[in-house]
Image 1 (cartoon, rainbow, N blue to C red):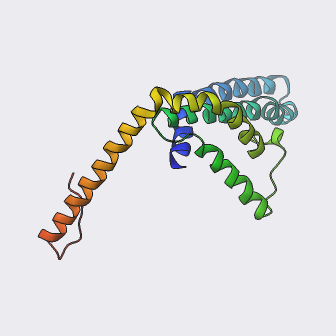
Image 2 (cartoon, rainbow, N blue to C red):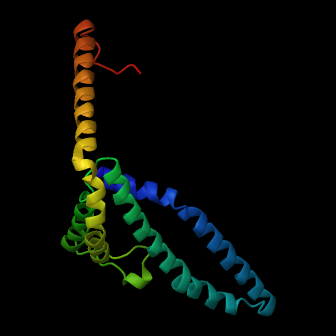
Amino acid sequence: ELAAVLGHEMAHNIARHAGERMSGGIIINVIARLLFLFDPSGVLTTIFLPTANLLSSLPHSREHESEADRIGIHLSAKACYDPRAAKRVFSAMAEGSTVSGERRPPEFLSTHPSHERRISQFDDWMPDTMRTFQSDFGDRCSRIRHEMSLARQKAAQQATERERQNPRHPATPHY
């Protein structure tokens, strides 16, 4: 599950979402300042900013989140982590908000797609992502998992050896 979350956050950076938000914010800010030239009282700006948020910023934010979900599961798959974990994460989040009685705003007022939409999108994207995950008949991932298992065994042996050599101090890795 952690790989799904990390893949999602890495995807925001890969897709340069922060830069897109900044660019959009600059444009909205320029328009808001120009409105002050026509209406120094600020009434037009007071109407414009929430409208721009509702019609531009929020939909783009939801698009960014969906794009990060899609890219993130592909990153997870390429890194040999099961991409189906992403669906489990959002299913647990949906279940948690239902159990706690949390009320979410309507999707059009939210920065994120609903849990239900995300889960549905994962279903749509999963066949292609699973092909990536299972490419070369899983040999690449099997090899990586085996190498990681050997590395964990070696690290455990080294920790045991350090503890044996210095029993008063708990094992701390030396990098």
